[in-house]
Image 1 (cartoon, each protein chain N blue to C red):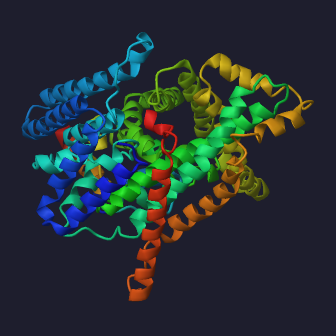
Image 2 (cartoon, rainbow over the protein chains, first blue to last red):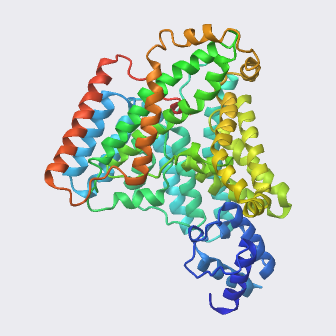
Image 3 (cartoon, chains in turn red, yellow):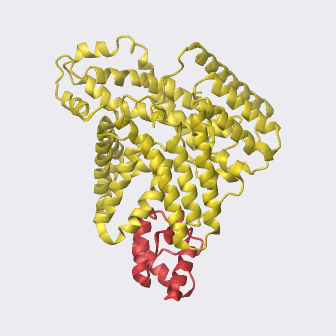
Length: 81
Length: 470
């Protein structure tokens, strides 16, 4: 993924899933990554919150359809400060 | 009107014919009228309640989309969802407080309540747009093949199918799928039910055989009964041009209890994952493993209590959650261990299904036994020894069970047939010659004429489906 958020997000994916070679794009969904189930999804959200020092609401997390949505929500929250 | 009845087959045939000869824009209206007709054969007043709930959620979703204030939208969603849950709980709990009352639980209440809740919450979460066509939405909520035992189909997969220009396929795979369900129910589940009933009725006979028969055969009976019911529902849907999500995926081939629950009653577990487990995990995400264990337990308890409010179901839920928590908390350590020990990995792959079946069989005692005392009696009977096992064996095969042995070869044959269906489907090749297609049509028609005669010949029809009670 391109951009600062994209690079940091890729790193977060790699450390959460324990796969140093994993690559994600804006269209990546949970069905594209074998280990990405509901348990890992929350682990990922917690890792993203730590990495970007933000806090998601349940509604924001449940509305996510792909990694692009996640990146957009992060950008929105960072810009809001 | 029951699933295994001539009346149901006539209604299905009539609706299938109507939607094929009428313009596509009439499809929703035809399905809606047929669904309410089906519903009214059970109870007309409950049809009014279903209609009222449908109108409430349809208007709620439209209103939610126009709301600007987030807090108001949140409160409004909570109010509507709570109202639906309270009505559901009222009907689930009421039998506990009034055992002598003769009252009716609305048909399919759990299923349509779950469909309505997911619709309202999805619109609130802005995952999907609210439907603007009431007929489409009402046809989705009341869709009669899914009213008795699901599967719990989401609006996002159902509504677009109503808007397709023509009804796709369904002429072979629909009736074949229904026939598979009919065979699972009437050849396997009903006959195994005789053995299980004998087991629970002879716990004090002097040997461990009755308890063993009851514990081992009940999970198979339950699976064949429920998956048969769902096969009939999915097959009926296919005949009407609606492709429904699968509810089972060979659950007894799972290698862990976690995997088992991903393969058993998949539309219910998926629903609870999205609308209960995930929001709960979000709330408890700062509590570490305790939060995870609490969320898993709450989710599993809800799955158990969905079947009914009783101590047996509570124990059933806690029993399974114990295994789920243990498996989840040890997952990464087990993964590392198996990565380093390939022999142990292969061994676990072979032994996994045996472990799963054993846990499910033991847990099912709390599901099936009428009380906790009866469940304890079942387990204690396992220590009765084998002294009078010969006498018990002949009692097991005495009438009315003397023909029920047919269930055992049928389990094997139907499991193979189901595996072939999952792998290849019941579809004819697109370019199959005309004689192949017409041979298949004639074969399916002959099979269903035979089934219809069987239904007419048995005055009472098949035994009621176990899962139709929930």
